[in-house]
Image (tube, rainbow over the protein chains, first blue to last red):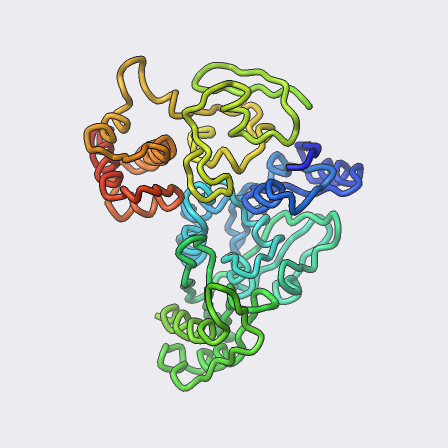
Length: 261
Length: 155
């Protein structure tokens, strides 16, 4: 790791002051991606601003939504009584991220801000009509993810919390890469009174995306059979050493069928 | 550089470290406790698992500074003098190791998961060990060891 500076402020306003005082600074959340990146010398920030002391670790029931602080760890979401009662699919998703030690350190905000194309959380944000609350504004999920590792976040903007809408029904099913446990394809299906949302992670070259055809099919008939006649296009899907675009297209359909129960 | 203080196996350690020092290097190089291993150094293998304020974490994927003020337990902190921790004893009795390199991480992960779930099932043990890799592939006896350790720990 290159030499760098470490600061741990006690509030988001202090964190913003700290990062502005650095040439090129980075916010450090759980560090499950950033620390390995630094160790491989793929990044060389002048400083790290650890936001774990900024009081962003909380889960609350807000009526139609569950609001989760950005620094809430995956293990806390997985074990949360509130989340398990209101959106069990979200707790299930959190319980399947990485391994036990990753879940003990990794955070919701860190995962969503990074927008790894194979991360699990972005699919829940998109399918559950989430609102991303930052230090300056609230961003709708459909406007938030703008491409692989890209989001609508401006420089020096901090995610403070994310509100997930409570669905009438939801499920998350992923086909994990057996080595990394990242999603080779993960599908989050959520049913609301005004229709069904289907978000796919692990598969798109542009990162997480909604699948309009499957949403239409499931909105008129919430049943795995409703998907049988659909042809899933492999256009724009990731091709790598783990799977071809065609293989991923098949997994999208298969995981969605398994999710619709 | 800057000073950090933390409790390591019950003893207060205060050292000057560079900001980019990893927690694993603090434990092994600065304090000299080499029971916690570095297997892969890429956050995959879990040979470096320790307890940070009671939860298992990979010490190779944290900065020492992030652990300021915390209480850390490493494999050296489990036994009570010459008396092994029940989980260590279970690994010994069930031959829960082959080369032994992954063992410190396996035992630390096992102790945490059993502490939180006394009546742990075999499936839960296997899921709980997903972050620990044994390249001798001796998983069968490791899982048996954790089961036996859980029973000794009051499961």
